Length: 263
Ligand SMILES: [Zn+2]
Image (cartoon, rainbow, N blue to C red; front, side, top):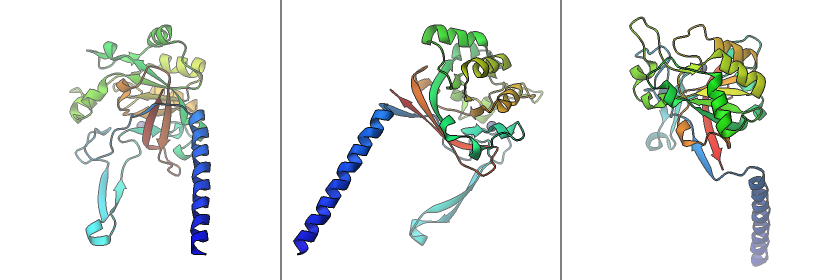
């Protein structure tokens, strides 16, 4: 009797495994990739912050340890715009999507990387131009409709040195590269991009405190990705980007995990 029971459980388990395997195969056919590249900096208390204050906007408190409580857990505090993060359209435009409202289908998209490192060298105030996009397309083909476009400026090399990453001149102005308004308008109006990203603290150049690119893109329901890492490791085109921001109720943005699925 016991043996029959064991056999029944075994058969049930085998069937479940078979169905699971079939399901997995179906998934594999829909999304094909051979590698995953993490474009996210680790969230910690020693990363560059917008205002450069000595006190980090991020802190953690240990609430339990395995030794004392049987399990390890913590609470953490952060600004919404610290580390690798997403700016929701609501960050710069009233009544536009907050981070929890961005439709999930806009968070898995073709990834395009504009490599402007050679232009940024010696020009910290560099703005990505329409010409840069034209150069990209003559080499790699037209940017696919509805993609997320990232600018690879090489600024990530400064990530571990907050002073150099923020690059403040004696007059208190930050200097790091961003997008020109014209380039952003071109990408949104003619290539229908859903997100714009960069490996600096802002898609607007550091010296432009009027934030024209933020204002324009927010009003077009386009989100921004800032402090992006590892862009040099992904191909210029052909990868799929998975954008996973924290689903914070009414958030202006928030920490985001960015994963590039490469073929
Ligand atoms: Zn931001």
